[in-house]
Image (tube, rainbow, N blue to C red; front, side):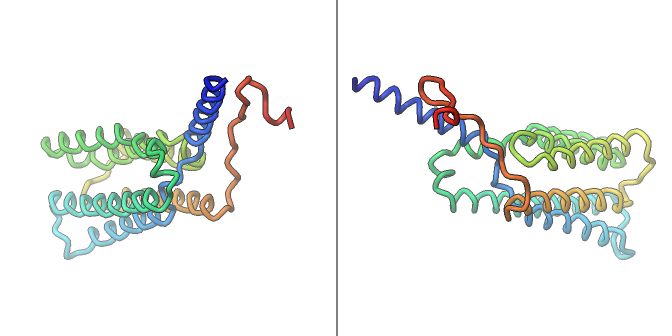
Length: 218
């Protein structure tokens, strides 16, 4: 009898874990995305100023600063979310969606180093847009659907920039405007979800230990 009770309890625990893992990921706040977008637009304005040296190295350093700020803001917010919620602290696997974007971002870092080493600076913007977009599409099952759509727009913009545009790395406005628009749209989507204005999260269908639908048993 005790064994059957323990099996039932374990089944309930596994079911609870499955429900928690399928919830939308709430570790990325919309405000952090908006700050990142504003930083990209500010960098575009600063880099287009007359006093800015017209050298790829100076522009690359400025964009590295934008990346550093964006990573700091977003992952600091993620860490604060982890600290504030006991449910997350007791189930660290809820942080798993934060790792979904790592492969695309890592590929972007490697390609950036390779292009810089070959002084192919004009290919950087298209590469960044494409791979950052792929990182957003990796959140398809853990963030609101709008984030996935924004990611596809990033990918399309990156492909267009690589294949058809004749832009220069010393013209910061295309990528600055693209990241500003994309991050603000993403930020609004996440902010609306956090304030309860977006559509409610659909909870997965749950069943009891015998496989019966709980809704039909009520």
